[in-house]
Image (cartoon, rainbow, N blue to C red):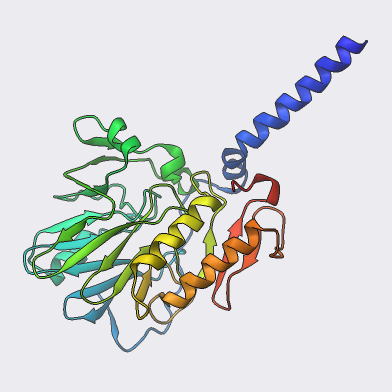
Length: 313
């Protein structure tokens, strides 16, 4: 009888352990229907922006920097076209339901390098083909790449949420963390800002103080409960960004939560995020909900995390 009871206990513990280990896949299978959601209705937009067509919205931040928005897509993505004298960077490319490359090519004749802020399906463009692709140079990514072809996996891509197959990226350029991307009379520094994902980067425009932050920080709910997320990494990414950016930084995120305008934040918002992460780690922040658990960062930002016992501090 004792042996049987021990077997039952071990079986239950094994099933619980497996459920915890596979919790992200189980959650996605339960909540995602595998099809893209319908487009949103167009809303009134800022006078400084204009519609490129019936889907893309373009705003000139300055004469060499453009935000390309997808405000009808439910995530309201914003990608950024950054021009130098010799070449341009397209930072993120949306989900690829429409071809953002064509929009970028109407704004510049320079050769364009596509750089994903991270590998989630709503940022890599998926079926869009770019002439030149640059990816953050992390050792585990290099080891996986064969002939500079990097096949994305489910944890990195999460495209099953909308029925999008994970692409294989042909990497033409590897970007060392901390290094400068020289566009010709314009320099971008690669900041390693994990947390939302372990492969997340931001770009600091050394001359202007613009920070292109991807999904690391933006107005609205920040996702720190996904399979590739880490609370510990989010704190490290906050430290990295605060140490690198000027007090006057203009932070341009990859999503907004409502029209009109761009998803803009400041250095103070990063400091608030760091303070919230420390408070969560130390058990001093009150959260709401079960999975995900929501913590307030400030009046514009919330952090969605796993339950306390599952947070990886």
